[in-house]
Image (cartoon, rainbow, N blue to C red):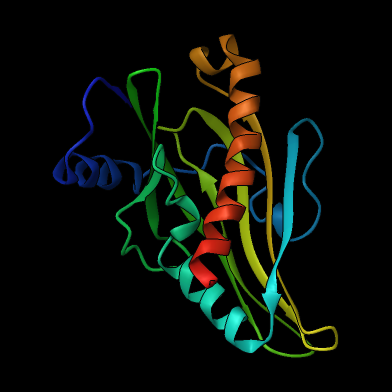
Length: 190
């Protein structure tokens, strides 16, 4: 959904209520947990956030608050959307004077403890999204090395005519998101 003005909280909720009834726009649901499917562009960003359980807990809490989207030009709405399979969220982007509202549904959640503890989730695109595909956000704590990593894995294809026409710009923006999301997570844990 494109708009000249930032959508109100009420408009976003109406949008999500409509999208929640619809199916995902791709077949390989959950593939970010294993191997992304052929025919999609794959993006990955992986950085070290720090060391130790405190950093891991802080990073997990930041994902629960959707802080990886706290970028100024991009945000997840509503920010209190619980990280639970089936929940829908809007990703609101601002570019070239326009607001673009995209709908996603959480398709799985990871919450594992062990030698490598993990917390994260993936969401997939709904019909009112500029693209089609899935994106996973994950924090890992390797207790042997004590490192805490933040990892984004996504596979996507452009769906909307404007994203196809502006493909080089869209690709730059996707890469920018990876860098800035990593920086937002660093800020959140330090």
